[in-house]
View (tube, rainbow, N blue to C red):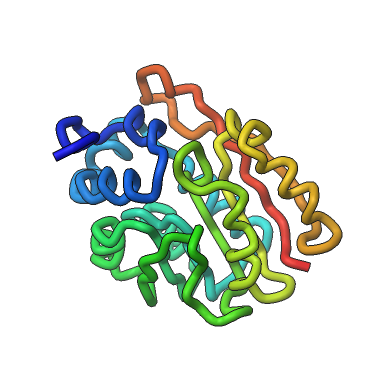
Length: 213
């Protein structure tokens, strides 16, 4: 047993992740308790904000939910009438929980740093809530997502505001504008609701909305 197995999975462990292996181990332990534990206790709201932003921008299916976890964002999308939705995540255990919700067409276990095993131009929408943050996914996976998206596909990606510039998201999106993406807008939203407590309760995310050129 090493590293995280002796700790209760929580936000601070999640923010300290450094590698894909760390992610797999944490989320395997966290999967069964994620919705009722972390999401409910911390009044987690980001998946709702991200799904609504996607729909408000005119987003339609088929959609890929990136870093789908247990399906929190997918469930909101489905409730808003979006579909079909596929889930991708590095954690098989999280995807198992997500597929029990009967909202996803398919589950794709993948480390996006290694690419995404789907045909080019598969999706009309790409959504990600809570995955673009420290130790999870960085801007280096944008090309894999763009490859999977059709021309004109709507993206809605939440990015931890603290990491937006520091981890290169701002530069990457700036470089892609006009060439690979268009109509980029950023909205700042709270990650947690008013019931949240603890040092991360006031954390914010930027939701990047754009279309594939």
